[in-house]
Amino acid sequence: MPEALDLLKTRRSVKAAELTGPGPSAAEIDTILTIGSRVPDHGKLRPWRFIIFEGDARLAAGDKIAAAFAAKYPDATGEQVDKERQRLARAPLVIAVVSRAGEHQKIPEWEQILSAGAAAMSLVFAAHALGYAANWITEWYAYDRRVLDAFGVGAQERLAGFVHIGRARGPAEDRERPALSEVATRYAG
Image (cartoon, rainbow, N blue to C red):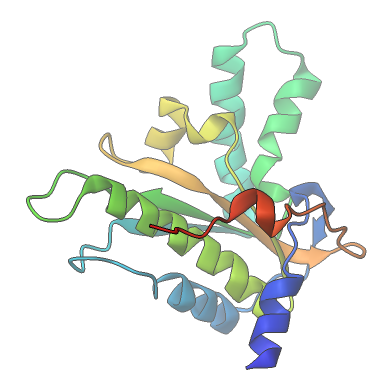
């Protein structure tokens, strides 16, 4: 068990631009997705799903992001549009987590949203356990309807984020973590 705790204690986010290949194999991707699917899910609703971007599909998706950016910012330079085109090409693998939370007679929507967040974090932990680095991010295009439509995200769905997975180019820097006294209290009645 200490090995599992050490693994959890050593997880760090690595900037998407600092990830490189090779990325996970098909079997490793299946493992990552399987672990991402093993999250609390009150009512067994599966209020999330995954979209996998790998290989040339990352660039095809980038074309959709660039087109939406150019439409949103018509004065953008070619260089700015090209930067947006590379958004999902920064890492060898990107997994979008789509929240499918909605009204339900027994299961609060909030619990469903939290389940999607748990799925995203589980993807990050699974990648770390396999020796990869990851970064869970949402950027402007996670909220842009043109991009969401292009990625097949329904009108009632939302993007919980994009998990970028690859190998760290160098050692991952840790950031300062809060003291437990700042974030934890004990209820005394």
